[in-house]
Image 1 (tube, helix red, strand yellow):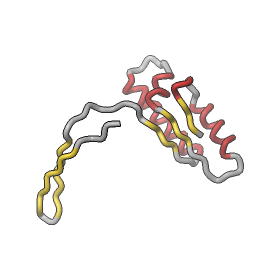
Image 2 (cartoon, one colour):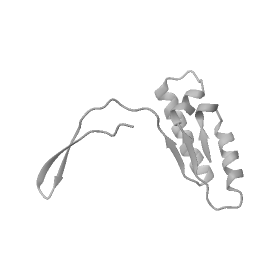
Image 3 (cartoon, one colour):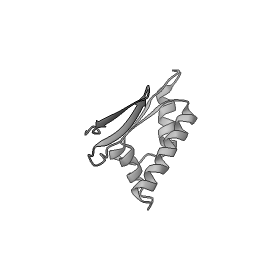
Length: 104
């Protein structure tokens, strides 16, 4: 099932009910939440964006366990573009890798 969170706020119970109905007698179902930021924001629970997002990510994890099914959460927020530097040590050689995060 694909949840378009920009069109309303379904509860965890709503999503699980639809997922179980969609699965029917099949062994598998995939739940896609597009986007987890919109879904969390739709709760209007008075929490900060960060707090609400964390609550909703935990709900998705609990839902995956309850349904015994994968849950794919699409993120819509980009972080500021910056260089990321990391050191990789292999075979006693030190290599510096510079990369930039992808921009969607």
